[in-house]
Image (cartoon, rainbow, N blue to C red; front, side, top):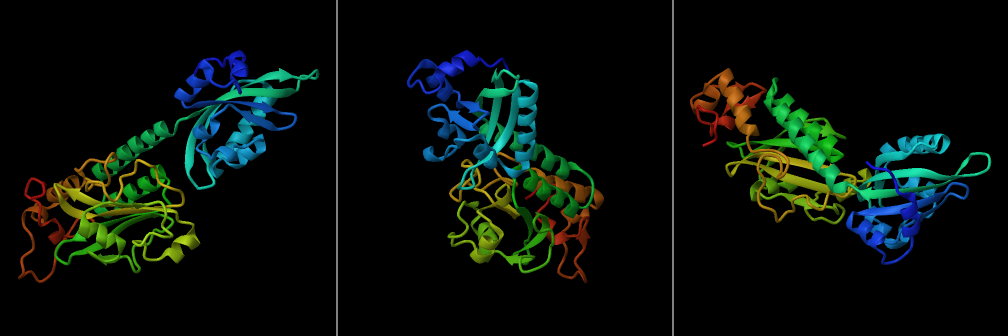
Length: 347
């Protein structure tokens, strides 16, 4: 990043339709001035759109602004700010701002102490803040794709691979918890195979869900993703009282498809609204996991790994005369892989 032109910034604050203001709007950037003595914080016109806030809710003190920062970032930002005021070095950081609605906006900010009193104490700072939400979201999705791809390609039982994948969803998409169900085709039941975040158990009422029942089963039956940023009123949410008690705001569920064949469901709850570009319930059926995140090769890789371990899991489905149902590595019933050919591809 280049140097901060504080002279032009001072001229640009509150000057209306001047070229600098228009350039700032185009760059998704706002300028600010902080009077350290009074804690007054002044923003350039239109800053609320950059911050993702209603116009009347932009903080007018630095303390109020800091209090709106995501809890995971607030302490770091306070320490950095104190260091800048004390040392006079330029200020540069990225953080998440939480709106009253729960929406999170990623911001990048740079600042500089531009005035000191007779004792050398900092009294005024100027800076710029840019909305970098789109970039951070793209980075998270790339990291998610990389981490889940690595999990699917790595060693270990299938359950472990799915668990690492669910953990990656929680980490990179800031979900409260994420779960993965795999389809038992013969029984038409979704088996819970991975759960990460707030809940990690694999038993309970949602351990086995018939296709068509509850929101998870209906996602499987319809083969359509479902998204809501208002779980309290969404009719697909079966227990709104639980959602309210746990502070859940959003839900997203995706059918896991390979060549239009259903293999399971991925679902997650979040305590803040999901991104506006998250696929909606009207979206096309997603390939493995969700559009924009993962390829459709996950189940094929898993099937190929099972085939290498014992070719009969993918090439020879269990017969009705079998005394027991054989199990593939990771504890997956062999009949679940009965649609696989000897090359590890779905039929």
